[in-house]
Image 1 (tube, rainbow, N blue to C red):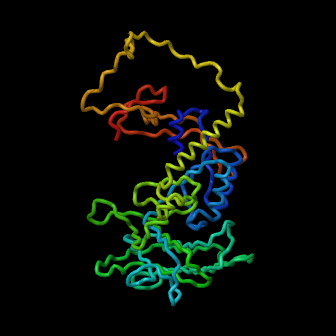
Image 2: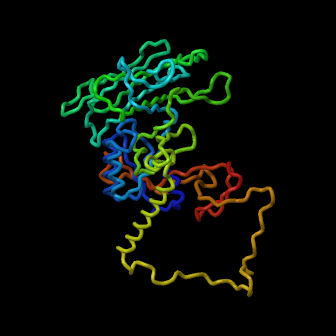
Image 3: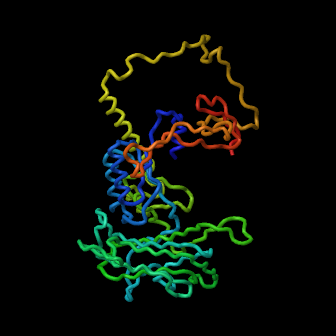
Length: 415
């Protein structure tokens, strides 16, 4: 993304500045937001999300840090994520034996997923909507997570005890409403067409706490190997299939923040938000939901900020004389076309018309030179903060380059 913006801006040494900030975790995210506010950046682009730290409704400690940046007038653009068809989103319904009712069918207390490759690492993350605005605020609602193999044998369990108050949690305790298990070297589950339940199963048990009808939970299932090519096949298939995925509520913080411009992909692997009634469609982000409205709001914000800056500079900084114009060529009366500039002939029929696009590569990729430079911001070397002033050149196939000194090229038959 930084390379594209740099190239469109003309690759000028005095062009836009990019601050690469380390936001790998809630603590580093807060530091990055504080750094962006202090340096008065114009835009924040965040291409990640957090499996915990939010309730799926724009609240929680992660979204609180993001709200500080938006309150300072910094537009925040966030990626929707790649959790499409990998999330179960549903209410907390407790059965008599303490397990949760998760679906309809023969085994209502189990969520099914199928692993199609051997030695695959699968992660199962359970969260429920009891996050507070403060980080590590604690919770008195406790859920346990269990994973069983196709034969019903328990292979992994997440049984940490959720605590609240001022007590420091122990080794098997946590203050977050979250359970997570990692299944390493998981064998492939055979696909039995006569028994669709013959696969790995996820079970959730309510251990303690008073759950309300408004409480909801989410289960995220991810794998280290997402695709594979079956024997004798010519196209890749999904290595992990979550049979009971809900198909909504797949946005994780900060992509679920209503003050964030969330950008997704039309592919099925992209995350989408919760479905709302028509009267509430604009209150929760989905896949590109509210994109036009937020785009107009961002445009109005940039217009107001530009107007304020012009007012602060005063009238002496504005242009008082008209911009010099080149002399107009002689035109005969009654015509609007210059005799000195004849009409350019059309391109031959059947040939792709040339298009002007920003120059992203040199004519000879082997002689591509790196423009600008990279340097570390003074005094911030230990905080993972870099200032990138010159991305590497990219390459394109079958491109005819002309007039490279002006930063433009003539392209034909791009592939």
